[in-house]
Image 1: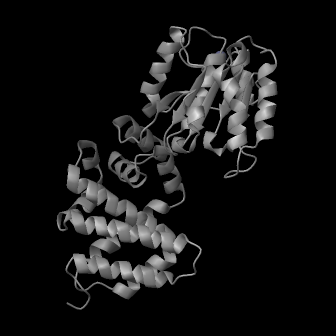
Image 2: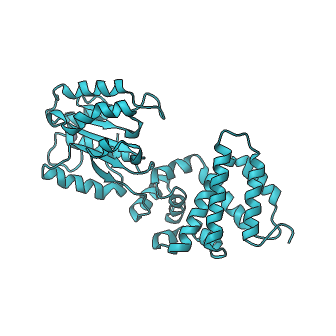
Image 3: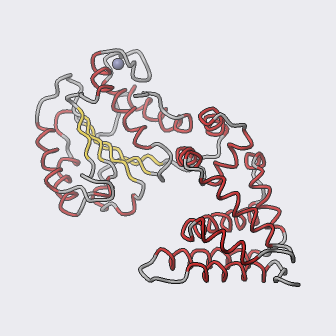
Amino acid sequence: MNLQIYPWQQSQWDRLETAFANNRLPHALLLAGPGGLGLEHFAQCLVARWLCLDSVAHTACGQCRSCQLFIAGNHPDINRVEPEEPGKQIKVDTVRELLHFIQLSSQFDRGKMVIIAPAEAMNRSSANSLLKTLEEPPGGSFFILVSHQPAFLPVTIRSRCQRLDFAPTHSDSALQWLGESLSIDKSKAADILTLSHGRPLLATSLVENDVVSKQSQVLSDLAKLDSSSADMSGTAQRWHDLGANEVFEWLQTFFASMARLKITGLQPLQAESALVRDLQRLANRLDLQALMRGYELAFQNYRAVTGPYNLNHLGLIEEFIVYWQSITGSKGGN
Ligand SMILES: [Zn+2]
């Protein structure tokens, strides 16, 4: 396992390094931010660093006995709490086992480390049973809660943690990392980072699953529909084949991005992206109201196709295309 943080996490890391050096680490930390930014990895790096026996290094050395146990996944002073299955709750029994673990003495004399991820998966009784320990963790133990939806955590949990926020990034260091990870140039990396809303790890999974080329196809279709010779029914069928829920999700992204471009203009780093320039070209021809309405329609139709009702997906796609043609003034056949 790699014990290095991602480059876009440096400022958060430096803050904790300073606290660590001054012996002022909080005993409970809440890492909050959207998925795709590597928050859990950050938590793992922190735990490894705090347990590392090499006191000189500013990151875990990867060589000492503690690091080796960590890498092997066998460190006796670490407990990682997660749902039994992804998307399920963290049950109260799991938290009770954790509280037992915390009472045992630490084998490396560095305290016990607990990672709870995703913390919002704790149900009410799990969260309640953790409160007292979180308030006064025994014997120098540390809690790291990871949450992509911190608003869903009880206030009583949040108030007992020091919160560290992670925001989506379009930084140069993220672009460079993405370029190197995927062996692509900076302009392509900027495109993909835009499509993933500034979440580099999501960006890599989009590429691995060939989502990016499909998104580009939909955007290029949008641009083509903006002409009188557009093939409306062919486009609708193609989007239907790509999957109506994915297409409406991407359309939300496109319209939100266009509205943002309209309001803030092109940011310097985004100018690298050919995709952003395409979006801007489209946005320039429309007013903000039409873009917001487009976003709402994409959102409504997304809810409709992902909801419990068996609606006609092709019909919803055609409805969207008709709206698009009406605002771009290129109704089919004109
Ligand atoms: Zn070490």
